[in-house]
Image (cartoon, rainbow, N blue to C red):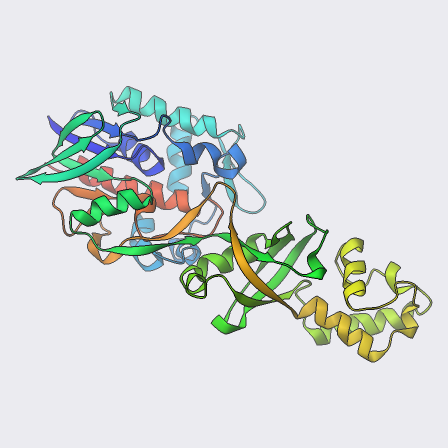
Length: 401
């Protein structure tokens, strides 16, 4: 019986093992930590954001700053609908939330972990934890995997290690080219009076742009103790991960808190001024922002909160609108996003055959998951890439005569 060694007991490794034909292969998973599926456990705040309700591969690839061209063919063979179907066949109910993220009905990542553990138990897959791989040697037709728990011989290696520098070094030693790692998905550190002491203030739809990089994103945003976060920020951090690393996370960002042009905002202001001349500006609800934030805007615009709306001069109005719609901030660093840390960089995609995720350099060697130079914005997309890639590997191996 041929031996498959899967290096890495995370999402891609387990999904691959769960889909392999155990009558053809003896399957062993090697995991260096004491627990398997650690990212699955903490994803989505412990609820596991399994995938995203986007069922058209052409639309789906738009969420991947790196890997979008290569993943198109992968997603035409296995996409979020197939993921839902796969779990459904195993009696796991999933639900689509309002923002299209998909979670187990149970709201617990343990449901997903247990499903995988059941699958591999049925298939007699051997899992070795606390087993760190030191080196992989090519031996004629086979591979010798040297690990802390001894040596393992493999007819096929499936490399799903995640993006640790050590695992990238190991595959580089086998001849693969590595694209340098940089963080993706991070929040921006900003010190500015406008954001001071109002952490937790959120905006349903904000627009952000980095003029120097000619790039913009929109989406929900939140003020944190460090600066700014939320999808509008995380998306721009993912798409510009490499450029932001180059400028050492020091750059100017322009924020429009209300997603309205200055002209439209001015019109709203003028209309309000006409219909509520006697109202004090501090108590006026002109825009969709919290009271606390509105008063902070007035404060940094140096406007007396008790002034009547009618007395606000043209110049004062312009200052308020500039701070609301075109506020410039200096970003002076980054904070990585919770535990769902994602990196850009990894194995060069030109060296992978995306029909079956096999290495173009090493025979009988497959690569999937975060070790590849593929990453996505937040929302279940990184997991979907893992499921789809792992499924392709399993199909390819199951179909070998």
